[in-house]
Amino acid sequence: MALILCCSLASPAFAAVAESEGEEATAPQTETVVSTDSEDWLVICIDPGHGGKDSGAVAKYNGKEYHEADLVLKIALYLKEELEKYEKVVVVMTREDENGDPSIIKSKEIVPRVEFAAEHNADFLISLHLNASENLNMHGALMLDSNGNYNKETAEIGNGVGANILSALSNLGLLNRGHLHRNSQDYKNPDGSAADYYGIVRGGIWRKIPSIIVEHCFLTNEDDFNGFLNSDKKLQQLAKADADGIAAYYGLEEKDETDTQNPIVLLDCDGHWAKKNIDAAVTKGWILGYPDHTFKPNNTLTRADFVTMLARVSGEELPEVQESPFSDFSADTYYARSVQWAVDAGIIKGFEDGTFHPGQSITREQMAHIMAMYLAHKGYEVKPESDKTQDKIEDYSSISGYAKEDVCFCYEEGLLTGRGNGFVPADGATRAEACTVLLRLDTYVADHPLPETPEESPEPDESPKPEETTKPASTPKPEDTVKDTASPKPEKSAKADAVEDVEASTEQKPDIVPAETTPADKDAAPSESTASAPAEETVESESTPDEQEAPAPAQSEAAEPGEITEPEA
Image (tube, rainbow, N blue to C red; front, side, top):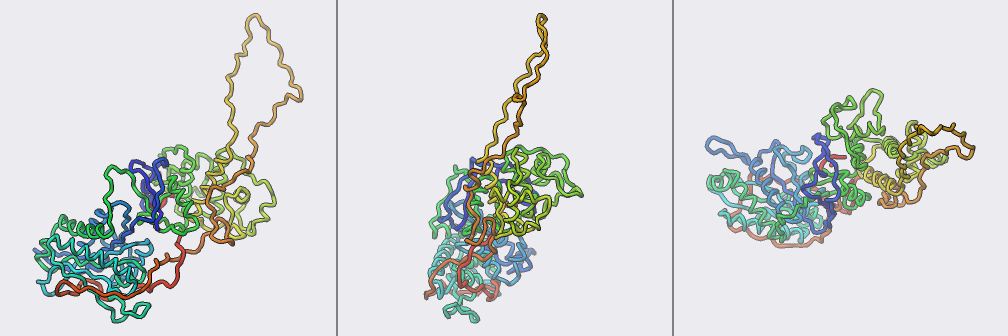
């Protein structure tokens, strides 16, 4: 299940803010953001075959070489565009350019592509290819799908979608070559039955993800090339056929063109201890996700990103920046205005050498110090009430001198409560923790309103009238002496109880971050099925990777790991 958040297209709150891309954050507008149930969303993973150093099949026409990897990438991008026209569909891709992520796109290695689909909780995996043969007369579309020997329900879904796609391709004029089910000679399914030959199909079935390989037509056949591959318009038609087949099987409905909701989809937060806090922080516009629809909740947060989040929490107007306040970043970075705001407000000062270290992970003690300085900026007293608080923190002695009081204050107020019995001040704070503590901070301010400062009355005209004489000012009596009007420290009534507790177990304190684990597989019982025969002579694709090692099926469930874009903040 994915975490799905929606915002209006008109809102600038969710402009991409990625540390790697240096895009500027815009002020959030939370009134356009809503949460929606994610159970009925369909996550489709598109795998453009080959890529990187692997060009796939190659053919030359009129002196120009055409590479399978390039053509299927175009089909994949068109397919993504087509699928995103439907309601409640999320599309992720194993690569969106020629090379892709080197950790995923590896020559002749299929496993990382299947793992990518699993990590993104894909409901369906489609790998796009073009066929090739030494027999230049071979033509038509072919579907490579499961033999149905294992996880029958999963296999039937893939084969059903494949049948629909073949029908749609046939309607374009391509020969329907049917389905090819090939058994592996080297791998067995966990139940001992013959496993699927192709790594994408086998790996998907083992992970309970319906998976198919679409051989759209033959790159080596001149009629197929001229009829379906030699222009972007024709490639788009192939993508449309793929989308039609998928939509028909799943019963997808096209979006209402008047609907201005644009979904922000986070695929890796299900089951995470901070899911509700992440949901709330994203809804408020404080932080986004990454372009691949993940949030990466267990990744550490940079100093620049935390300050950017804090500036959004404040809701204060950010200053324009002509010159960077620090020497290690320029005024045109996405976080410059937020950092300048924090400097002007006395919240941060940077390091002695005039740097800020924006890309460095923020430590927990730095986070406590900045939060305390923020409250001081707002007008709160941030001294800890008890000297005994430090006795409750086992690693108090390891906290830097400048942050000791700030940590104790945050500890007393429940803004930060440590990990286990310690505070681990030098550890990096995670994105999930940042969402949690800033929600507590926001709740603290809301629950502890400061007394309003009375407006000053205008000075009376002290000039005496001509007929009057001024009297000497009388000396005030002792009881008339002006008392100290400083605002008292707010009572600790309702702290951050509205914020979801971070405890993942009874042993963990609210800020504990559990170790990252792999996503849990979906349940399905293995069973037998009968493969369907091809429509006519089937051809093994010479451009499809040879039999590959597929990831072994998971034996037990695991918890979910933990900027649409970085950062943000």
